[in-house]
Image (tube, rainbow, N blue to C red; front, side, top):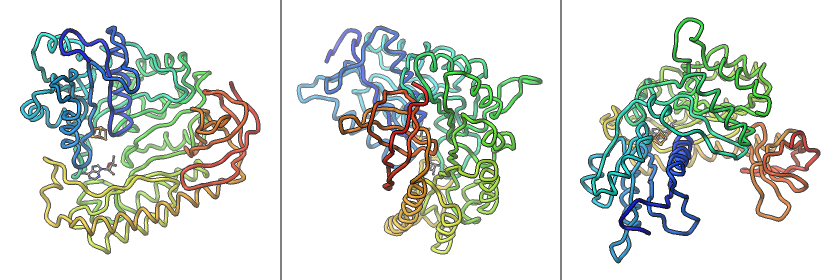
Length: 444
Ligand code: 5AD
Ligand code: SF4
């Protein structure tokens, strides 16, 4: 671990959502392009990037304890960069509170890390939390990623202003990356071995090509164009907002074979009063009708969602409406959270904040229902034959792990290699994974 001079090794630690994972990969590529190398597992790095998440509680506190842990008893420490959404939201505070931090860089400014590192070598601490994102992508080096599954950020930011959410403040206003750039990045990912691309955005389905006239096409056109890449086998996207669902997107699920039968469509609550207080712009009923349309297009589609329990003012009866919605949908998988007041958001100042024990109890009941449905969904897949994209080796020798079209983790034994698309019969289901029997290799 070096205390002076330019850093030669780095480590990027990403927390939070898949977009942060994507950003972390791109920061790593940027640093590698500058001649730094990734510190081997278990070894200390000259530069540590903490790529933080601010969506729920105690994220900031966690950053300070991570910073503390990076400082050794003898006073030595790596060069520390705080990136991500906590950096954006609390940059100045971090600089004031943590002298060990050399630089604070927001999610839309990390392409400038090399200059910030150079300044840090000269002893200057820097903060860059500029927005928006369009400059960033143009300034980043080409992709190097070679895994079978790759992320591609197509849209960033959010204009919806749900009253609980910090994203509009940390990631900024909605911006879409240009179609041509995305096709180019997708092509380079596929050339380097990607077989599945997950399109990312805080409101991914709000993507539209920045332009006018013939250039003004929407998210479904992007999916259809990506599906034409011959070596790309699978397309996924996350996260969608109910308000931005178009007829065209639903039609893709019926017509584009490479688009996987999986939809992550957060609902947050089953109570119309709570949804209104959250500024969600949909009702429980309009959400259910939307799911019906997806199911009509693709009857086997696996549904996923996000839920918040204990939003300010949520009554027991309102919480039970959420349980009813869960029963009505039958989710294949879902994420659920206790409400966490985020500084600066409208809900944090609302009356009727819910006590912790009530939130705990509601979360437990909700998760019991969601787990029940997840197991039922997995059990219902037993006997089906489907394709699995092999992502890595399993724990046991000769075992492989990959994903079904419905995003279930499937493990199986036999002849295979990472990146293969194989056909399996789903043989036995647990809550979190499925055991498959290998039938044949579809594409190696
Ligand atoms: N408290 C709890 N959960 C939240 N989410 C977003 N903001 C909050 C908050 N303040 C959840 C929502 C969202 C997911 C990414 O995180 O369910 O869909
Ligand atoms: Fe966390 Fe949201 Fe930022 Fe992702 S965009 S890192 S979920 S705060």
